[in-house]
Length: 283
Ligand SMILES: [Zn+2]
Image (tube, rainbow, N blue to C red):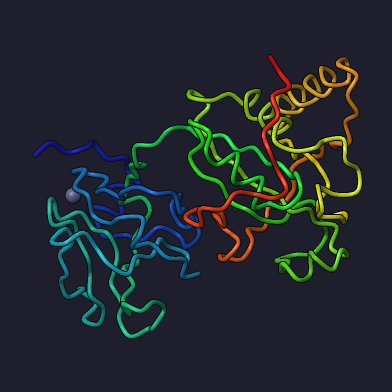
């Protein structure tokens, strides 16, 4: 079996059953989707779905890939040691009865015993738009090819974890907004911003359509300077056409996803929005 050459610290943990200092490992807090493999022999050991945050200072998993991990009594006579079933690399210890997750198991693993392989995924980019009732904004943006995911929520205000009722109360500073995660190799940010303008009345200052209130204002929350330049350029283009633009460009702030029943509201209802419609503006 092909095995990786280990550094002295890796040897200390993996071969000589040492322990890395708590909170020092690179995987203590990671939550990306993928698979954790044995550092030495690359056998897949844990999936990201098994990982949970335990505050113990080491990566914690409440399950393993079937057959990947061997449990043996630790030489201390108390604990149960876990090793890679492929190469016997020391991983850490497994604890039961702590009731931290439903499975009631905690594989406490040294980061240095692991490598992480991210799931095959495209590098996604995020755009955040507010154009009135977020059901309508999502209805249009969610159907563009290259858009991977849309989430309706609240952003731009000063209240943490706002509820729909709080936002309707108009005192949170938040706007109803949609986070659009897209594949920039399939659709550009420029195209999204154009479509955003073409699907609402960006000249309306007090809300959108019949929805009146500060939470329904038109805004683009930009993630970086490049997005900001694209959005400003298109607003200039609209003004050059003689159009009024009430849309504000704002720096992106924490995006608070809305309650589940607001997500993909129009999907499967056979209804379409009352508050948004498509009007071609750009060539
Ligand atoms: Zn191994």
